[in-house]
Structures are given as C-alpha cells and as structure tokens.
Length: 123
Image (cartoon, rainbow, N blue to C red; front, side, top):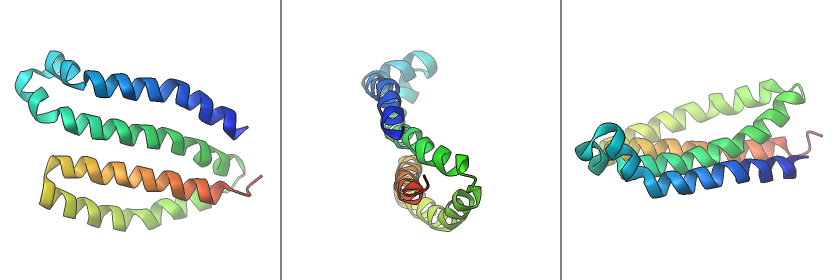
C-alpha cells in the first residue's frame, strides 16, 4: 500500500531532514571547517529539502517500474532534462552555487509530482 510507504518514508526522512537542517552548520564545521560551514550551511539545507522530495519520488517511481511501465519514467526524465538544464544555467548565472541547489530541489520536487500523477491508475 502506498500510504504505508509514505508513512514509513516520513518516519525516516522527516526526522533526518529536521536534524540535518538543524545541525547543518555544526556538521559542516566539524567536517570541513568554519569557513566552509559559513558559506555552505544554507546550500546543505536547501539540498536536504530536495532530498525529502526525491525520497518521496521513489514511491511512485517504483510503482511505475513494478507495473512494467519503465518507458513512462524514462520518457518523464527525458522530457525533464532540457528544462532542468536551462533552469540550472539560469539559477547558477543569477545565484551561484545556491542557485544550483535551488534548481535541483525544484527539479526533484516537480519530478515527484509528475511521477505521482503518472502512477495514479497504474494498479
């Protein structure tokens, strides 16, 4: 049941994201040093939000794959690539590294929504 899958993913991913966001500066400071932590904490936080959406996207992705409809996911990802690359370029030019994090987070969030819609009615 997909509902159970979302609950289980939420039980693991939401606490991980909350802890990661809350401790991102500390983790980066210990791991890579103060200067890196000061410049990268917000980037990590944005990527952690993307991680959450990307994790949820695995459920409709697996549903589509399990139904033998791999062509659907392949087509979705092929269609996504050009808008993503254009957006990535725009975001990097205007916002730098944080723009790349925003672009990826937006892409995986939209990917989740598109896969969710595509997976409806599979079973």
